[in-house]
Amino acid sequence: MMNSLNKREWLVVLRDSVALTALCAAAALLVNAVRPDGIPVIEKKEYQIYVPCPETLGKAEGVSPSQLRSPGAGKVLIVDGRSREAFDAWHVPGAVSIPFDYLMPVSADDLNRVASSGAAAVVVYGDGEDPDSGEELARELAGNGIRNVRFVKGGAPAIQKAGKGGAGLE
Image 1 (spheres, rainbow, N blue to C red):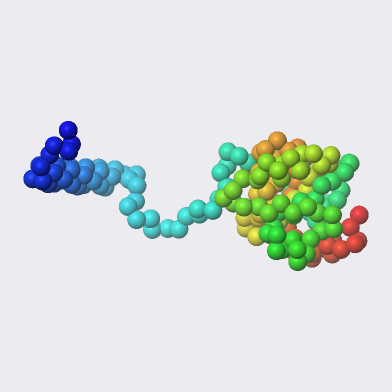
Image 2 (cartoon, rainbow, N blue to C red):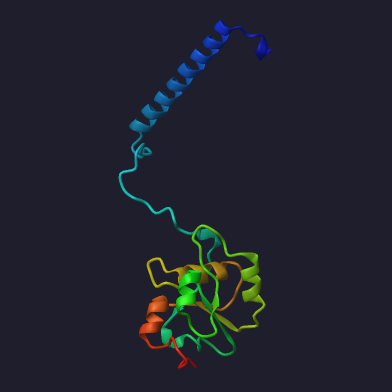
């Protein structure tokens, strides 16, 4: 049926569609303008877009660098949540690298590796920035069912500052 329209009819349909769209947009802007809590057309303040979704996050306790290997009894798995390049440059001996990405969830392979490690506790350290990649990774691991997850407050810089980055770790 649409193919049976001639050129003049197509132009009428196009004109009417544009007019209706413009009328709806104007009405929406007018209603938004008179609302006391209207949505700004142009945002005037910056807002974060690289934040993890809160519904996938669990709770993880922060520990000091001195508690890196002794947050509880039993075997401890140490996870480095920084980038692979940062891990290659320096890491706590025995740590495993699981780079944290704010936009991508932890892979099923990494979750399985942590879950099947046999560790009684998992301690994650990150870049120490705000937000800290280690804290966010720890919360994501806890949100995915990993138990006894902790993060090092201050991340890798705090560990290095405390002198816990070498063979002197317990």
